[in-house]
Amino acid sequence: MQITGNHQMAWIVRHNDESVREGYIRNGGKEVKLFTSALKAFQCNNRIVMAQRKHLDDFLRGRIIGRLECGRTQLEVSEELGIAQSVISRLWQRFQDDGNVSRCYSTGRPRVTTPNEDRYLAVTAKRNRRSTASDLSRQLSSATGTTVSRQTVYRRLGHIGLYARRPVRCVPLTATHCRLRLAWSREHALWTPQQWSCVMFSDESRFSLQSDSRRTFIWRASGTRYHQENTIERHRYGGAGWLVWGGIILGSRTDLHVQSLTMTGHTYRDVILKQHVRLFRGAMGAEFLFMDDNARPHRANIVDECLQSEDITRMDWPAYSPDLNPIEHVWVCLADELQPVNPLPPVYRNFGGHCLMSGVIFPKIRLII
Image 1 (cartoon, one colour):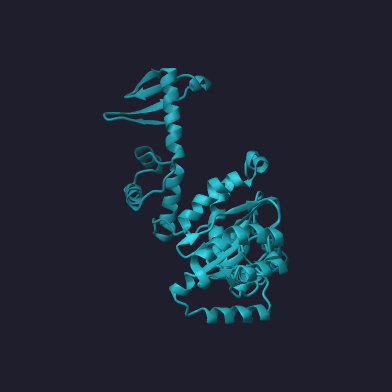
Image 2 (cartoon, rainbow, N blue to C red):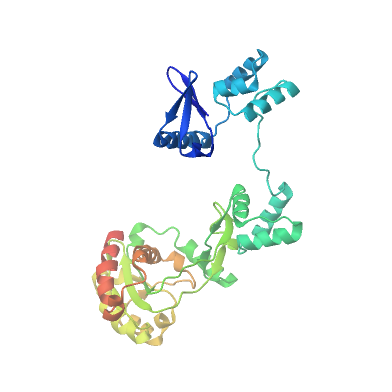
């Protein structure tokens, strides 16, 4: 074992089994006893150096071959350069076989799947976008006999731009719904800001105390979020929560109405129309337009009679068109703000939603509008 210094070179000589605890240095023909601590420190440093394995550069390879061609032995070159004799032996043998000492190019671990198998994964994922990576791995194994891991499936699909993402939820639309939505959009496409300033958009939203995890993933490429094959039809998400009603108009808004019960026709007439909407109708005059969706409580006979008696004009609204209502985007923003505090503490569930909505939602409405 070699110890190098600035002025001399020394060797550790092991005499017997006690060399583990004691060692000797032969320096210039003299043997000097090493202390046990010094020997342990030397052995530790030597293990660290041996663990840090590095490839030989071309210059060092040339020095080794040059010394061997000059007649030096492999053992002498190994001791002089501090390189294992086995490394020098393999390098010299390779030089004698093909005359090359440069390190060969390595491609790394070969790919488990072939290009055809990669295409099979892509086609299978596009045909059944709700299949998991484990499902795709099992299908590939049964079809081709090649077994791959879930991470390999993720990488192969990621190379072609397919990633696991949540599908977009949408409401089921029929041909009649699409026709009425298109007609309404064309009718109001050229409205001026002055005309829109007379319209109050209203809606109620249910804030659930139990969040929808939406852990169902699909395979889709970038820019295809709203394609039909990447959506899931879902009307609503149930669970206990608070019902919040609000109305927005250009430059103003209504107060929020919060209740834990379901909205009925009587509640909609007595609370929403008479306490909120009627005030804006009296302030804006006959040009005022009131927009509400086609929910069953909004279309009750007592509601129609109240609107007629209060001389409130209702805007025609196509069914299943929540995306056309601007206040729906307000609810989305509020839901994102409330998501970090979901599930709610028990104090809100027992005390009521007024405290929550007045302290959290109301300031957000003011900021958004």
